[in-house]
Length: 352
Image (tube, rainbow, N blue to C red; front, side):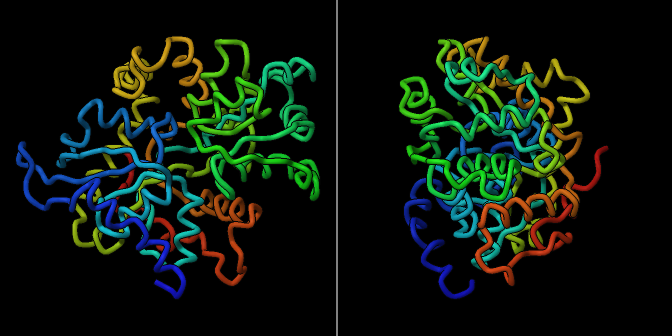
């Protein structure tokens, strides 16, 4: 790692080791290698992963996978860098931050082909401006410039940057007057319902959960692919240490292909994919009502890729987003979008 990166990645490694344990190289009960996958958050942006878990695709590809949810992308990445977990499923712009710090991570599979975040606003605001999610996208973005406090998970997070990015499309200084408050992900839906914030951006079902009571409204569901810069864009990706992937290529291939099969099912058999997602422990009827689940599903289904392979064109969009969001502080450290720098298709391969 380069100088200055070490404290970020060493902080919390002891806690992560306690939480996950050191991944065992022993064989699992079925005689398959056992791997640990951690995800940044438990939402529908990771639908391909949840379907793969629900339908036992990991076992079918030759591994036993233990999937755990941690508190954010940085914790997820730290677990893999510190070898407390084998794989991290998190957002691609976070990989650019780790690259600048010299952390050893590379993406080997993409869960989405669009950014899946939904921008939700208070329903009274949408009504005031006479807009719906079927209104022209520029009209909806313009509403964001008229808001009071906008909720975000933390300073510089994707939940903040994606709103700034959308508003900046209206002009170079259009986003200067936006006001953000940082409340953490779990508090944002209730904060909007109670009028503490006027809007927030998170992947489903967070914004969608505010609609049934008539308090919130998903105004800009990015997963539908209406913003070209955030479409055909590898949003949530599977990250791994390059040394682990090279040492265990069969395991890396099995995990990447299992999740890719989960995404592919949304195209080959949508009913089965939706049923598997609904049966998953995170999204079953005890956790989500039918109306919230159906709305959330419709917001992300168009973002599911036919396979989890990536392209330099898609990663160039990620880099442009990161630069526009000022995540890249030093232009000299802007990574290349070429395969082998931030990502590789070596393990995921092509669809069957």
